[in-house]
Image 1 (cartoon, rainbow, N blue to C red):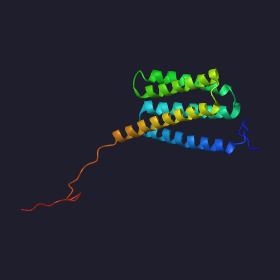
Image 2 (image 1 turned 90 degrees about the vertical axis):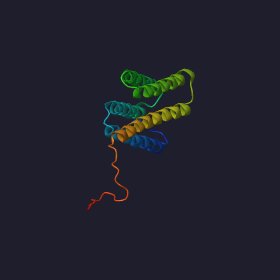
Image 3 (image 1 turned 135 degrees about the vertical axis):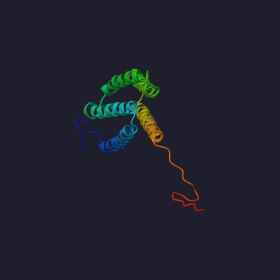
Image 4 (image 1 turned 45 degrees about the horizontal axis):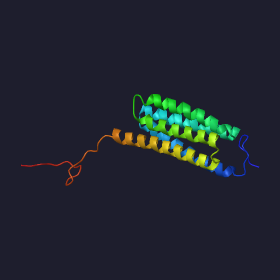
Length: 165
């Protein structure tokens, strides 16, 4: 049987494929965040990536009902940090709202026994939204920092013109 740490399900290959996809998306988010040259975007990307990595390791080691309590604690910490960051800029406020949505879903799972399928489904969609939001903000900033292109005369292009007479 294939096992990763203490995690030994029947569908390990599917889990590894999903984690590889999210790992690639997270890596691209971090690359774009660093290219954007924004301290806020970079910090948000690193916080999201760090919590994602920590959650994946926790999932493989202690998969069980404590995973949702662990998620509430980490998302609460992220929501607090994004709330603090949003006092200076508006960018982190959206991430704070996404983390609050994750907290509400995890609390609903623990309080009302929502199925694991729908809980994980919603967690994945909010994580994808946060990845897309940070990546989109980074790409927007990269495009805004890019110097404007110079326009040349269409007829002559970039050539030197000699005028006589």
